[in-house]
Length: 280
Image (cartoon, rainbow, N blue to C red; front, side, top):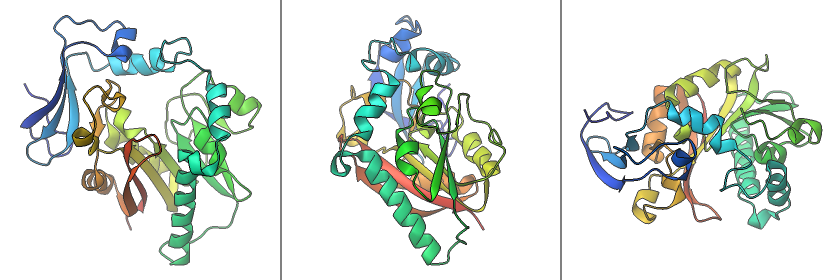
């Protein structure tokens, strides 16, 4: 039976890309070529771009818990700390993270100035979900903002010991830090989640009426502009949103997108970034 669309539940789709062998992430957790298939498809009803596959659904969790984060994996040539040091040393004009931070803070300030939501008293708190490398959290914090991280990776103890950024090395659940946050960020997270709606609804429990949610995801535009063997279509990615479909799922989960934009990153990836608040 065809896999239904995440957004509209239609089972009618058009195949865009098809693969007959496991990619390197699946192979690392012993997915074999026997009876294998994986396809990127576009929903014929609503246009949503998503992946269907032969592997058992739980394999994706095995990838994240083991191979995806394994410092000895053949696709990881540097430690998490080495990657952190290299990327945070980049000047602003070469740093995707610094540009991202600038856009978020400028947009938040504009929303506060326009009186759309009430500006709280500083210091402000930001929770980065899935940002175990700490690059975004580190770049985001300043004299007004304090960063927190939750991520199951176990190869990043330097975050707590050297950077002094509060870190919980577990999968996200609400209230892990026993506090509300002024900003919650999901930077390249939703495309990995088997149930992105569940995550989006859960994060609301760590927000108050004046909190922001920042989401950044790969842009489905890549399906028309990138070759099928580009890593953006790897087996760890389950969905790709565009401006319309990201706005739709945010709305379904109780959010209102205040600002949403389509970008091409410095690494030539296509992405959609959105800043949202809870619907009034």
